[in-house]
Image (cartoon, rainbow, N blue to C red; front, side, top):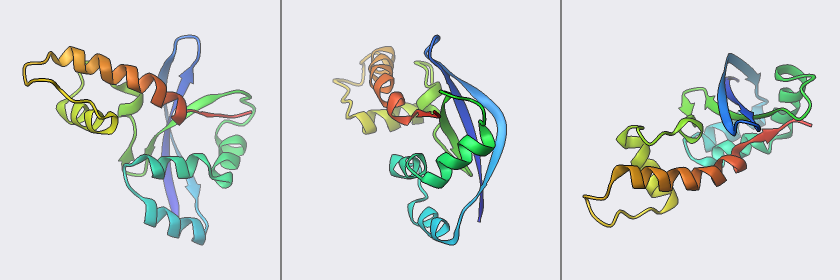
Length: 139
């Protein structure tokens, strides 16, 4: 089974992500394909499975970012599942992103009238920590 990936490269100095415009393809073994089908979802367990996979890390080191010591990146898309909102969330992002992060981080709005910017800033504070967990570093 072949799957497609897109990545975002992390810049330490600017503390921001930039989209790697390339689509990369990885061949999964039969065992990995079964696990992929079992875990395939937009949740972070799926993301972390790839992050911790020896074959994925080897693929990244040898095929995608060879000769890129200490390169930091994150997975944006795995086939049709996107994790981009983690890296490119803005206070002006759409309602679906707000709802997703409010649920993920347990953010409770005190009233319907609470300023959206306040909630967005709280989400960004939580994301500053969460993004660090999602970054993969080649060494």
